[in-house]
Image (cartoon, rainbow, N blue to C red; front, side, top):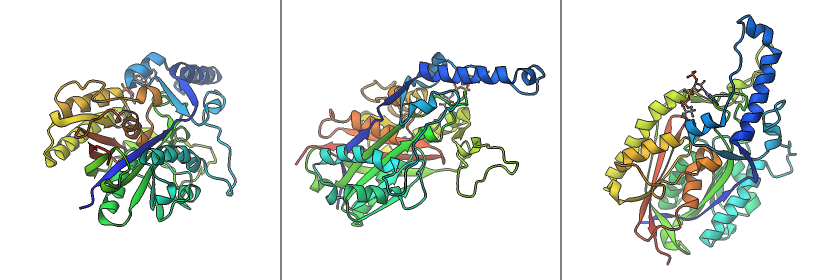
Length: 376
Ligand code: COA
């Protein structure tokens, strides 16, 4: 039987960085200006004053210290507070496809493959810049890849669901060699003026080459098995879509077309779902927690990851067993666990097993059990 394997991975990290301190300075300038402007209504009890944010709250609540973004100028301008991304003409590469180029080049280089050898591209991300033509097909064309390509969206679980789709197609013969690409421009769907979530997200792009283990050109990770699950919830939601229009009174209200969450409820409901999902996956594969060398978890919140790690391993995982990257990247949606994998997997020895796991809106959870194999 064909055993699919991850033979290369790559990360494009946008060069612009926003620290918690810079972010809070902008937010507080905005909040203070709002409160001054609405002093009379606030005094009359008609509207609520905006509370201030703080770097200490952010780092304590989330573990996030900074994030990379595609444009910090707009985000950090208290009069703008969203990325100012140039509108491109239809004849130029889109921004997601452009981000994908660097991540794919790194993944292909690691796999020792040329783009022309790829016959499946899945652009798996939380937000796509347009419905069609698929961003994945644009990436296919820019890379000079063959075969076919399509977009998929399972929010924060897009990349692991994409890996499952690619691995199954390679196993079944529908494709020979795949790229699963996750360009995440989370800065574009975040409300940077909402104190409860303004610190959560960052931008990045990851890519993975998946092909039959027997075709690998070098060291690789055999995909032993994948497991995906979903369960409907409104607690993380984005109402943007082609049927959404401005409010009938003409007021520009885009808040419900951006990321919204009931953070506390997500915390409470997703944690048991994820830890029992991972434990059931391991049990089905007859892998004990002690045999798991590393966990590459979704990167949304440090306390969440600590909890899941403790449940799965039965003890507090060391940083080596469960590396976090969210302090540097924030939540990068589906790309988070893949960044962790890409940056912290080279040191695993042949025979070492690890688990990639992402979770989020839907709710959705996807896990990928891998085993390090030596090169041919
Ligand atoms: N600065 C200062 N205070 C803040 C603040 C900020 N930036 N944001 C919120 N607060 C206040 C709140 O108003 C609240 O005040 P109150 O107790 O007077 O009501 C208090 O701090 C606690 O807020 P809360 O939202 O309950 O914090 P939390 O500890 O739950 O952390 C999240 C918030 C979002 C970091 C956390 O809930 C979380 O990570 N949830 C899951 C996120 C997730 O995985 N989402 C999936 C997305 S893909």
